[in-house]
Length: 131
Length: 100
Image (cartoon, rainbow over all chains, first blue to last red; front, side):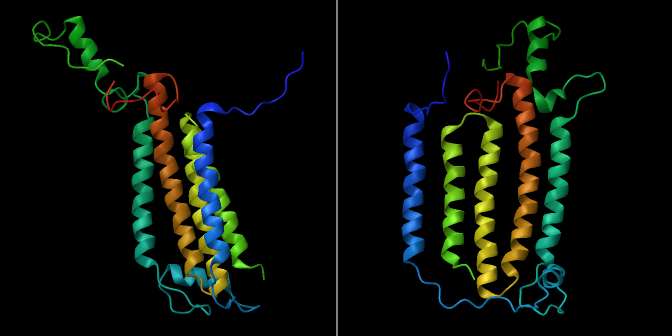
């Protein structure tokens, strides 16, 4: 018996309609708006070089643009922070276990309390939430 | 020169496809892809208006947006990795609490 792909509706129908309705509203607004006469770049304008100059606050670009050196430095810091965060989230310990405090939300400590390793485990009520 | 309205319509369509993905999907990776679609829709607008007004500010800013999107994806994939380790699934509806 052959099958064919079917459109799943049901729970997806309302969010789909919301997205389509938003598109219709945006399209109506865009098509009714007027934007004035286009300026455009000159045919021989050095656009790539001007982007580089704008990025480093150099006043040498032939095409007008604002300066972005501060934004460049901020993005630099954000990228480094994201890189470090991603490595910390993804790394494993040398034994091959996950990094407990970051990755298991304290589950390892809870398990140890259950097993009775901790002297306070007998009278300590269970703190960890169930799934 | 292509009228700027067509670029804006394209951006609106891409944005709404991303919104549709966010509203309907449960897979965290598809979530991330949908957010990327929405970010790229904003980039299309920036570049379109940059060409329209003959000013490189929009194109430069879109480069920064792409860098921010890269940072967001790095952290997002790290979070999805932790989600998978703890729930053995990447269904975002499985993680309903900040602890487990």
